[in-house]
Length: 319
Length: 290
Image (cartoon, rainbow over all chains, first blue to last red; front, side, top):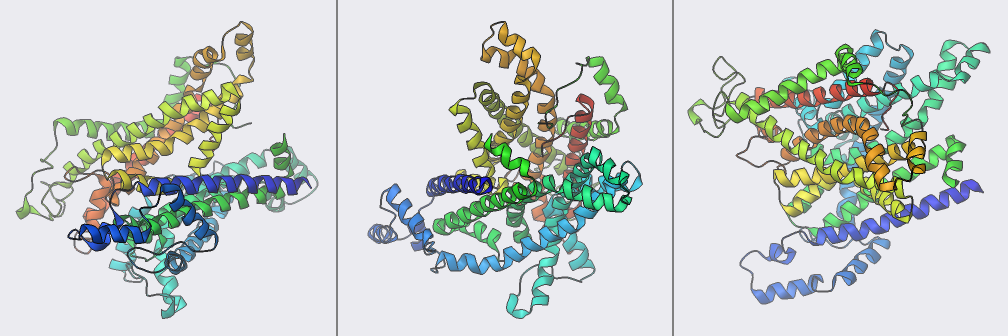
């Protein structure tokens, strides 16, 4: 019952956040300088043609009615029609999502696969050479901008060794292998800073847990060092790691804006960029709202996950 | 919350100084940060070459004794450009951190002191800004108000506000439970006065540490924005801009893609080490929230 109320409250709060976000996004993007009608027709357009197009695009309607039209449309899956591409925004987003989503998943899995073992090794060999060298690497990993790391990867693996494509995306039709190959370097570039942060969090969380009394109890009841570490240590250290994983998702989204530009990947990040350059406001506001919604949703999932892992969090929420 | 642990004796500046000398992170970090700052300051008076002078006949020279780090496609000296670029990066990061602190800290401390519906509003607004990915926010902001170093400062500054507000809020809440605050309350001091006289000085340590971290993040985001063409504008050199120009020339002038990146890593690494060191020095038990 408590769990149920907890989730209801979290969902309600997230919905309010999303609602406010939609207003803010709409307001911000509508003040972007540049007239979309002018952009479509060019600088030499006749005044009456411009006025007619503005009317047709609904740009003359008052702010609130344009907002409601937009939001109500989204609720039934209609994000409007792109000014520049003349296709439904939802179609445009869906098409690009098939590049950005696999990229994000690859980057997140890669960083988790590297960071968890690295963090565990560092914590269990605390202050010995594995710990010191892993911490040194993560310190470096955090300081390297992902776009520069991406350039270095291109320099080494695409230009010098020629193992991988330097950029571009042939499309999934060209085969899953080719698709994954063109997403590999971008995913590595995105994963590096994430993995560094995650490994440090894993290490410090595990170090905290290792100092707990129940760890000594576990050893005292005859569990081997390895079993104590994995069964009691790593499991309990996962709560802060989960929080950071949720936070990282939003960094990952931001990261794709730059990384997709470097590798010429036609994903959501590039779409944002093109939409800004072409003043394709309807695409821009739909995209930004979608990304913010994704961040809110992921954080909701993270909260739910650790309310299930750690009952104390639920109780704290009620007090 | 164990995140903000203010237990322990107050240390004198002498104690802190001795600890600083023994702390390796602090020492290396201070050395690196100091040298980056020195280069940036030096660039106001002297650079090996004039960064605005184009010298097309000397374009794309690989590093040699004259041009230590080579020249770019306009024949400009890369080393000189890096020096001036340091100045721009640091300026953007300093202003961004100042905006975040100047607005975030009073908001967070006020929210902790008042505990009314107003404080809820402040903290919820904070969570709200956090829902926007920082770089996305910065990209949107510079797209609306035009790409420039000033707008990059403001955009990164806005993203810093909730960071400092959260920190000040959490830190103040923990302090309000302490006995010396209670005794100040009993002596009849107002909540505003207690905040200014007792809370703020005790928050200084965690604020300095977080300030260093946000400073390094600011340099990273500024580089990213400039790389996208949304930060510092030409002809002012900036590290991010240099990298984006280098990208098209990687096949024949790879050195152009190497040095600005090393400069960024150097500056960020130095600040992070400095932050880690300061955290250990101020309070060994103090842990970062994130």
